[in-house]
Length: 238
Image (cartoon, rainbow, N blue to C red; front, side):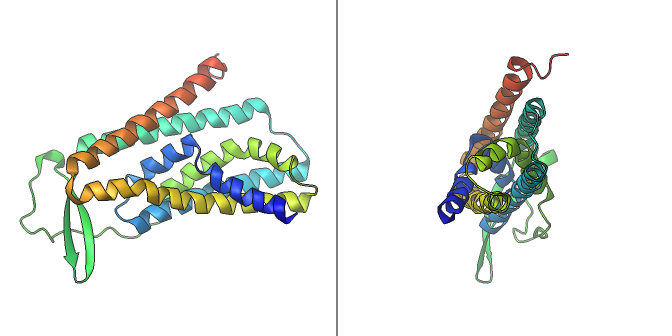
């Protein structure tokens, strides 16, 4: 039993590395200004993902039911559309804000702050005259994670049924899978943010280029999912 549950935890961490998850979290990380904020975005994504998996998975296991294939594909199609929107939002912010960065210190704390020329604005004569963003709960990350979790619940249920011997073991397996995905996504989000933060310190052109890359790849991956599921699989056919 211990081996099976450990396997669930490790599979949960590996699950966080899937392409659509990486694209979604990269688009969220592009909005963050610190490693702590980025890790929080990733962990909240993982929590939403795990919450949806546990709720859907436990409901299906308790009812001994099967997720309809067309419904599961429809959720994956919704994930594709969501990725397109996330990627377009990244591209919109890059074009709209024309962001570059300033680095300075408050006491012993080192800060990197974004500066926007949206609307043709100029530099503030006082580089320390800015507002520090308030700490707000990353609701967008939670909603994106919930959507991914709902879309992935059918595959997880099949994996769970093939791995466990009882209902309680199955629920615990899903729980550990979720914990693994939370940890994996928090780590992944920080890794993704490192080149963004490094380029933000001195290479504005590189930072904006990375942002553009994130946006284009996210849109491309989402569009490919929409095409595959909507056109090839026929979900969008009337």
